[in-house]
Length: 182
Image 1 (cartoon, rainbow, N blue to C red):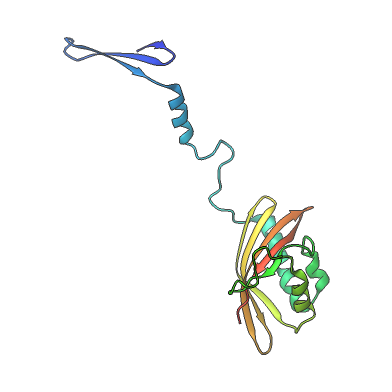
Image 2: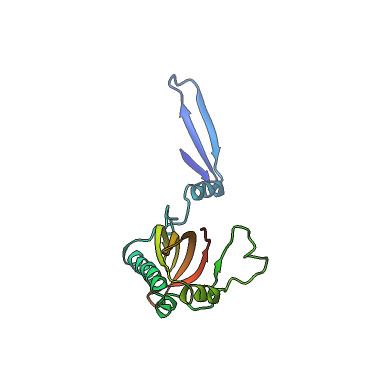
């Protein structure tokens, strides 16, 4: 084999009987080779896309502590503890109804004040979380869960999604959306 130029290779083969000599020229377009090589990788080296974003280790433990403080604060009506879990009281925080009436086009989602009044000035209840899923990528986490609120007379439940940000080494609730079912 000998190289003819930067884009072609000449290949010569003599068949076994020695009577026929076959020559063929193989043209290779280097761009095609580079394109094919780049297609064989899903992401550049060092930036592989994770198969899952399950939170683990100390971050997961800290997020689980935040969730524990959440249920503790609403069950004991400790508004100061609850608000210490929030990034601030102006975060998106809203009930989403099945009828979609609570979320009108262009409607505000910063409704923490209504939640605050219902939870911290309303009738007492106990809250627990179940079916908790925590996903995380660096300083951003997402939690989805089912909450169950119980009193001596009623039990209600709903699905909740929380977006968390790690700020100054502490996880804070940056948004909350939830449904409610009796």
